[in-house]
Image (cartoon, rainbow, N blue to C red; front, side):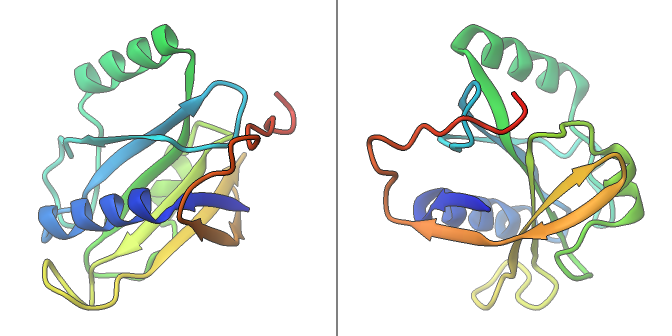
Length: 152
């Protein structure tokens, strides 16, 4: 299950709306070894495409170096679909390389960059296997919640 604050969920949705009609993408980093997304990092879709996203390689390298320095992991990797449902495509599945990350997809197909519903779904993608998981949206994380990620 992905537990995420309403503020982070809203930031991901706002980024998807702002970048529509192109796909938006980014990361939510969290303390290493936890399953707690904390730091919103919107990224540039280097492909600038309505049907595909690609992290800019220099920006991604900077982010991973920064996360290493801050002792963080990519807890959430997100992107938007602009014309289809919020479900991983074959390309999304083939590019998923973080086995402990939550892959969040939102769809702006119905609302575009305006008001309206934006489905928000989370998946685990490990070795090409996709599993949808429940999303719990909370106002804030309990102070004691720094649970370890299984398998770390």
